Length: 68
Image (tube, rainbow, N blue to C red; front, side):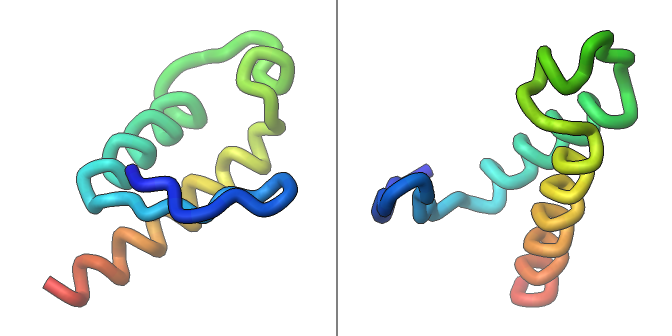
């Protein structure tokens, strides 16, 4: 992962395909594989927000797959 810029409360990052796959797998496990009691408190986000992020990462991985 390479940090490109930080502006206010946003960070521009460059992630490799392998790094995206790690994030995808971890978020998928959190959302679908294991039961997390008090999900919002322990994860720091709602399940819906994490699911949306998981979908965006999946879409990004799909784009990468079309380029290789």
